[in-house]
Length: 169
Ligand SMILES: CC(C)(COP(=O)(O)OP(=O)(O)OC[C@H]1O[C@@H](n2cnc3c(N)ncnc32)[C@H](O)[C@@H]1OP(=O)(O)O)[C@@H](O)C(=O)NCCC(=O)NCCS
Image (cartoon, rainbow, N blue to C red; front, side, top):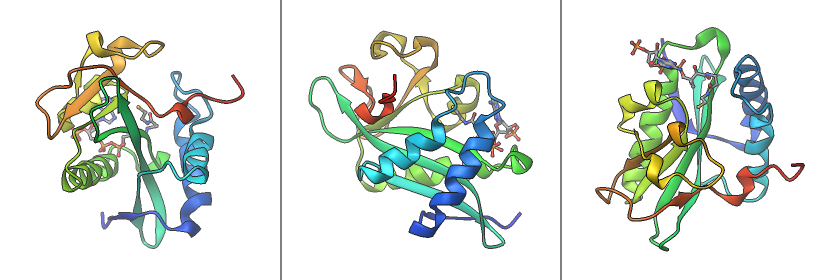
């Protein structure tokens, strides 16, 4: 399958919103607001990296990276998520391409590392490992994972961008 990975453009926002909504809709663990989260990041200038997968001129997937914050103040942390692929095109390595390209961009920025909450069975292939002892309060420890990049392991809890907190909650 011929898929290009590239940074998002302003005209991609509606397709990203739609794919994310439909990809997360059947997921029991989804909040149902993942598509709104991306819009909120973008509107606040907090979408540090947004990569889309394009196939035949159409957006078919997207990965968001935002800045994350180490409790000890060490710089260069990022969080991955949401990531979504067009439901009919999943399990064809589009998600992997998006995540690998995002990690390559983090390395190019000399990032300390990347955190996420997600299924370890999926994310371990990219080098993410669970760090339950460093899980921020309120996050599910079994799903909290870290990919150390510039550093070998974090020295403190790394928290997600405050915009992850839904203002309606
Ligand atoms: C999760 C998601 C982004 C993965 O994208 P994708 O393009 O379907 O995944 P890939 O094809 O790159 O997956 C690579 C491998 O992981 C496997 N895989 C995919 N999802 C998996 C999961 N949840 N758990 C374990 N393995 C998984 C694939 O079967 C594939 O295996 P293979 O290498 O043996 O062929 C996509 O399935 C999706 O949009 N899901 C709905 C939204 C969602 O749950 N997002 C993530 C929230 S944490």
